[in-house]
Amino acid sequence: MEDNQRFNLIATAASGLEALTGKELRNLGIDCQVENGRARFQGTVKTIAETNLWLRTADRVKIVVGEFDAYTFDELFEKVKALPWEEYLPLDAAFPVAGKSIKSKLYSTPDCQAITKKAIVERMRTYYHRPQNVPLIETGALYSLEVILRKDHVMILLDTTGPSLFKRGYRLEKGGAPLKENMAAALVKLTNWYKDKPFVDPVCGSGTLCIEAALIGHQLAPGFNRDFACEKWEWVPDAIFEQVRNEAEQAADYDIELDITGFDINGEMIDIARANADELGLGDSITFKQQALKDFSTEKEGGVIVANPPYGERLGEEDSARKLYKEMGEVFKPLITWSKYILTSDLAFEDFYGQKATKKRKLYNGSLRTDLFQYWGQRK
Image (tube, rainbow, N blue to C red; front, side, top):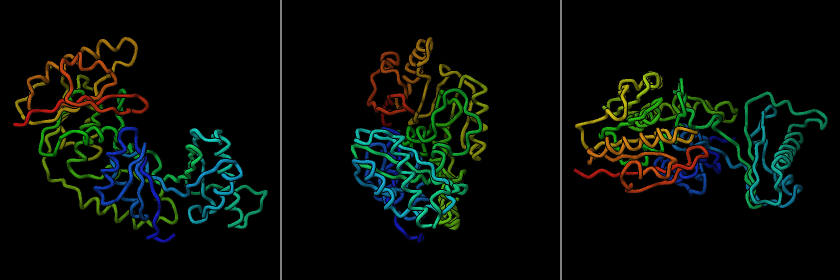
């Protein structure tokens, strides 16, 4: 595989975040097309390294090995077998095949997975001159594959990322029901916050929103603290990832002073938040303090509040969650120059907060439908 070979690529993203992922790609100088749950783009091995390192809102970066229509299992088998698997997979590659089938004639996902696997094995046996009755060893690096059928259109994908991009490598302890890091980054990006403004999370839990804001403020690559599956592939040179990490180090702005504060009523959560921030060396960039929401006040102006309060989804918790929404409305009311962004699955939020939102945006927090209630501050 040549270093300058171009690949068809996709960055997958949670429903509602695709446009943000597309914007991130364009900011990296990469043309893309945004589709449901993903953004498509093209690039080299270096592009794969850069997108894994820099995308804040995506889940994974995948290579589109092949794409075609298939209406019978024979057709699926032959078209998968025709792909140049030897360019991607060495003889000892471990290559599990995941799958899904949506509104397709070939509706049995396990069968589609098995046939895809069988077709690749056959191609590999022929190329590497392996006997029919001896299984491939699969003890080498991991090449996770996926066969996706949607309306009889097949995509065969190879995952370059490994564990999802939300696993940044800084979360030592989670605490309660944490917000995924890529969702937290998306929430920060959906606000009007800029690094010279105060940023407050009044119910910060393990600190994820504040930490993601600090990563953005310091221009730190979110994937800097972790490894990726494709780094173990023999056709991905170590030098490329080394170069991309060095470039990310050069891009970082450690000197900027940020005004980021996280409060939580639970002192243990504050300790966890501090430990998570320290893991990234961001302890001096974020102030974490034990404090109840009702005690929050500030003389500062033009700041941004971002909150992911408890939703009251569990039995018996709805009343306490709605009491908190009411407190938010009262505590935030005097802060007329501040913008507030609150994520919750409670569609009656505005009734308890006491004010209609300037704008609402539907987002999925995992499989849970939520709304980001936005209250824009008055300009000074």
